[in-house]
Length: 320
Image 1 (tube, rainbow, N blue to C red):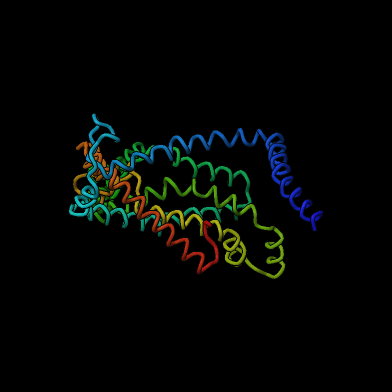
Image 2 (cartoon, rainbow, N blue to C red; image 1 turned 60 degrees about the horizontal axis):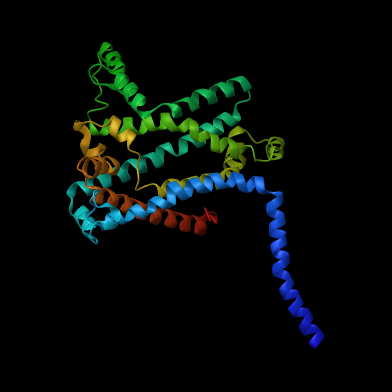
């Protein structure tokens, strides 16, 4: 029994030493990978985690001369003030509505484009189409806004000039709330759909080509192969990106609604990001701006967790 006991003690003491040696050996062999990993880790620590300290501004009467630490605590006063603002509920509604339309219309667009490009057999045409579709992603929203105004302005826009020359009534794309929403969503599809196809085209390369050959032998046409092979093959990618997009339902970019908006359509164009800019930044009410940002983050997290939970229950797939 004593020999067995001493052997057990010796093994338990030698395990940490062997583990340290294996970790040291692993680090020595793959130090290049750790060095490459250090840069993105440093980026996230410096620009993502350290700024989280600024969230405390939402709970303080922030004074830039006193700094974050020395500013007096205000508790939940900023949140109470926000929820008493009538404009806040309007911009929250607009944010949710525009994001929902983007989710319904803009989200499927890259999937459709990727499937269509995957079916193209002429290589030079496929490469040319991809290049043309990717280009709008690299154009600033300021430039896109100028293009939209040049094309769709009621009096001087090219589209309405053509319509009037055909004895048709001009369409108020940028001054009527309904047409403005259509213009907003359409410009978003044009700007982002081509770039979004990259992820789906990468996922399509992982589908086994033998499945298509077997389906062709069985007499399946192109639409049947797309429905039974292509779409199921990228199902997991679609679900993950859908969950991520749902998690962004409470947040919205600043450039697109700000550039395309105007005083005639503020009832539908004012969103949370422009509201924060006007109330929080222009009026120097940094506590209000931070509180709204924290509200967006919490709501987005709830949407993300809920959509991931539902996806796991329904499809057995999720982000984690």
